[in-house]
Length: 415
Picture (cartoon, rainbow, N blue to C red):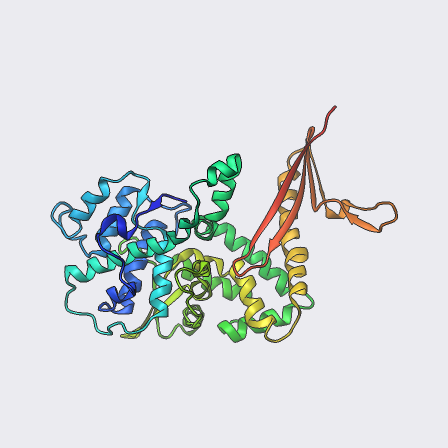
């Protein structure tokens, strides 16, 4: 975990309200989404390859939530909360990406928010929003309460592995993919689909019916343009303002902002951290005004993943499975054998091509007929440098948020 999220009970006295989202229903949903996007963007600007959880950014995010950025830092609404924060260890932080994802999800799933913004917000309204976000931290950390005080004694040296596994539901969201790497692997995937004898026509039909685009170059042009175009260094929020005449761009963004009505699990259910509604639609449609259609990119990482890992699931769940085009194994075989293994193979070929002291073999050279058992694959990839050998297996996990990972096993060869 990147820092320890500060809970409501750390800052405020009294019990958590039975329905915390009621604290913020006097603020329009559009304003709430924009306010949280202002935090999420500060924590992970589009061009950053890591999170910024510095005290400076945490304080700036707090002041942004309280609409206090225009006041002197020592004489504003945020001042007493800043002093309270500075008394805590540096490892404790007010806001994380998961704070924002949790809040987004709950706000999108609820109704009853006021639809008209007041001429100005009261300090109480903005402080209630701050309280709500700290309650989100408390909800996220709810699952930590299942630890036993004796776990470290029972598990000994294995406690760290146990702890990291237990924290995986929210730690997974602190991985930051490099934008250009993700666009490249996404292009590699879609190029394989585009040229596959079986999937090509289905892939093109999916792009056309879903996004109004039947060419992967066009799809990437709009996705990449919207990704980098959504950055605003001045406002520090990821959003897009598209002229109503740009129908193709609006079609792509409208699809990514379509609400799916995925039921929100209760806060004591671990599935509440799946954030499926946000993974399906990481954009918020702000509507049309004066010929401009506004969209807020709620989470730039999830938006980026729409060209790769989330696309793998979308294509399966939204098109291949409902139309009974193929079964899950067929789709998994394509992803593993025709996309992911060739992608890893290309990487190792590039690594080894200029290294005359290394030997690289792919699975084509690692399949043997052993004891008459037919073709037995020893490993997916073999990489040797001097007396060190890497035996590599490429594995894909087909959950709703897949992770493709090469698994390495190192062998030392004795002279």
